[in-house]
Image (cartoon, rainbow, N blue to C red; front, side):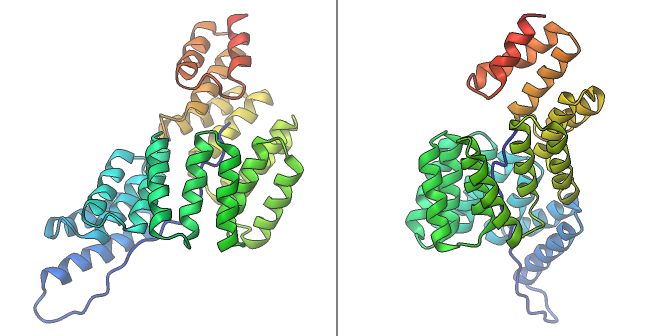
Length: 313
């Protein structure tokens, strides 16, 4: 299972253009930027990347195109390339808050938690009144398992933006970690009132149901999350695990494999694939996947239980 690491509504920067009979380089690069944004709205990420890259051929330091291209790379899990684009912006403007925020999120997805923490601390120095700094700070602390500090960071963000569903869902996640399920559900219900189309609300509800061993309820909740956001790899991974527990092994493996294809670094999906091989009584494959996860995160939930099961085959 994988918690909703972070939520963020990606904001694409647009160019304001004045058209004249004689195109300048400013006009040309701005037009490429707008075309990239239009393609991204149509979910044509390949064309969006091409247009942003064309803008950058004209001006390699074009901040708007660098950030937007980084956002697309992030969506495609091409995280090293996203980080490179954000870092280019920050080399020119070290206090650019949007680049710091997006790079911090990319570092998190890339498993570089301490670098994300550093970006969050820099962002808080740049603007203490921006909820995004507290949000990123909480996410980084959460990944470092400094849960009390993470909860405080989310509370600081909520003091600035009390109705922000991103902060609310991540606050609920911290209650989930602490097995405070009733408190987590209360926070999620508030988040749902504010934004009933936030898929992570329903994913976390599924995780709470799973912890209570209500596997069919867990499946129902995550199905709702996937209806809203069908491309989220972590939701498919969770659905795959619930299907394994409900005895639907083939469909469960299909979801888990989808998640791994989208993000090969998702250790939770590799763990779940190991559990699939336990259920198939394939000891060697089970130990191979579970052993790989153990080397990188020996304290992961359920991992040691699965390892004992695999060794007993």
